[in-house]
Structure formats: C-alpha cells, structure tokens
Length: 196
Length: 196
DNA sequence: AGAGCCATGTAAGAGGTTACATGATTAG
DNA sequence: CTAATCATGTAACCTCTTACATGGCTCT
Image (tube, rainbow over all chains, first blue to last red; front, side, top):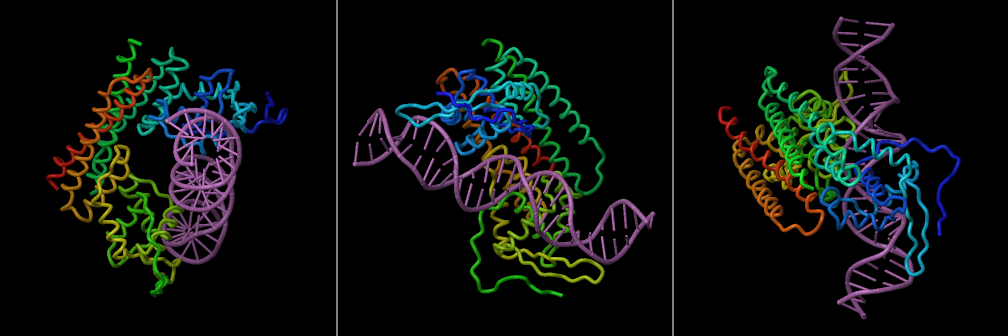
C-alpha cells in the first residue's frame, strides 16, 4: 500500500525560490496533516473552493509543482493502490516543507501589487493553520505598506526635473492610491476578524 | 544606405495578440514618424525616460519584440551603415502597425490589475500622439471600472453560501477597494490635465 | 590604460498557458 | 448511450529573466 518514491541518502538539492502557487500547495498539504492528500483532491480545492477566488491553478501546473516540491524534499510521495479507481499519489508535508511554509507565512510582501495574490494567500493559510499569528501578520504588512506610502509621498514632493514631471506624478499618484486602498482594507480586516 | 529587409509578395502571417511591451514599442515608433528609430535609441527611452517608470524592458526582450513586430508586418526594418559605429537597424511603423496601435489606444482595460501597466501606457501614448482623445479614453475607462465596482458590490451582497463566506468577503472587499482607488485616481487626472 | 558607450544580439532556464491523452467507472 | 468523474500527466508553445558575447570607439 505504501511504496515511498524517494531517493534515500542522496543529498537533496537546495530548494530554489518558490512561487505563490507552490506555497499554497504547501499550505493545503499542511492542512491535510499526516494523512496526506493526492493531486486530484488538491485540484478540486482550486477549482471549487474559496482558494479559486484567489489563485487559478490548472492541473498541469499543479502536478508539475508537486514533482518539484518532491524533488526538493518539501513533500514526500507514496502510491496508494485502489481497486476500482486509478492509483493515487498521496503527498505529505515534510519537516523542511513545513519550515519553508512557516517562514513564508511570516514574511509580509514588499510591494503593493503582491497584496492581491501573495498576501491574500498568506492571510488565507494563516487563518487556517496558525490563526494566533493573524494579528502579527496584518501588523507587519501594515508597517511595510505605510513605509511604502511614505516613500511615495516623498518622491512626489521631489522637485520636477524635466518636462516628464506630469507623467511621473501620474504614476506616483496611482501607486500611492493603490497603496492607501490596501492599507484601508488591511485595517478593515482586524475589525471584521474580531467576532469569529 | 537603405537595404530594406523584408520579403515582398509573401502573405504576412496574421499578428497574434500583442503585450503591453510591444504596444509601447509601436507607440515609440509612431512618435518617431517616417524617420524611424533604431533599437538602441528605443532601449534608452525605457532605461532613462519616464517610460521606465511604467514598464521595464531589457534590451534582450526589446530586440526580440522588434523581430516579432517585423515578422508580422507591423514595422519595417532597414539597415543604416555608419562609418565609425556599428550598423543600425532603423525601424518604421507601417500602416498595419499604426492601425493596431490606434485600436489598442482606444480600448479601455477590463480589469483593475491592468490599470497599473496597460492603462498607464495607453495614457502615456495618448497624451503624446492623440491628445484630443484623452478625455474619451479616461471616460471609457471610468465607465468600465464603475461597472466593475458595481458588480463587486452586488457579489458582496449575495447570501453566504457556506463557511468560506469570510474569505470570499475579504477578497471581494480588496478588489473593490483597489477599483475604487483607481476610480478616484482617474478622476484626479481630468482636473490636473486641464492646464497643460 | 581602463571605463563606459554604441549596437545587436544569444544562451539558458524558469514559469506559464492551452490543449490533449489515457482508461476505467459511475450517474443520468 | 452519453457525459462526467476519477487520476495523472504530456506536448507544444509563449513569455520573461538574467547574464553574457562581440568589437570598435570615445572619454578621462
């Protein structure tokens, strides 16, 4: 029933930077615990669950990511035979994978454009896995965005260097507006979160 | 001095969808007029001009895009020999290219996330090439974003279907906040634009 | 003499999209 | 009988990033 498919003894290659899709997979794996979970089940969470509102992940890329996560030792894989159905590859989070996930969950995003995807994912999985860290995550993200907004305001006050001043102001004002909107939204989180 | 490098007579392949980088190249080519412009000069506009605030384009990709635009007949290319310097490939916008550019300039973007890159580019080149269309572009974009904001508000009012209601509300509220911020910014454009 | 500009690229790889391949089972 | 579900992928194709290759010239 369990035939673990991994090279023992060989040194694992150091994992490269993971993207939001891969981190979200680690998050789902963490939710499944020691029982593990297989690819098709994971795919359903992206196509039918609330995760799909945040990120879109086609099955092709999903299986590709799982292979990569396995190759770098962040998850393990073993085949589960079923009488009536195709075999499943059940994946389980390893210690390394869990540490990678926890590290990612604690890092606020640096740019406003990463709020929509990366930060929403962090929020989603922090709520599910380590809800006690919610306040801290929001607070840290808040301070990053505040610093960004300050820096943008400072840049807008810089003297006009040439004829492209209007274009520059346009861009800066948009970025500032988006950052302020994200900040307001962040604050609205803490108040709504209170009564759960 | 001029040795045009293109297949005559052969039917041109229908151009595929172009990305923002390629459209911005068409925009710069349009600004250069019949005199044309060469790759290195274009690269400078991305690294040193106000365009660089909006989009980042490395020389590798820039030359790659130029080849593609030439292949689809949106620009022409001819070599200009220089005594002291390396040869230049001077590019000129064709009629097809100009029509493609004009069409793109008149289309508002459909999603809020495209405001930062695509719409800023449209704004940038409309100001330079067809400033009389500025008001219309802004007005059309405004109506698209207003409809989006309405639709988001409607979705937020939908009854909670399951336990993921809070997550869904979080996502919707962020998208709504970003859309409203873009709308406010859009409105601030018309007022600032008046005295130029 | 060395740095950097001029001008055009290539090479290598990561990451993603879209569509299809397979083959059995179950629901309408 | 048809369609969808289960389960895992492959193939082909874009795009983008990062870094480097080339080779002569100008500036300090």
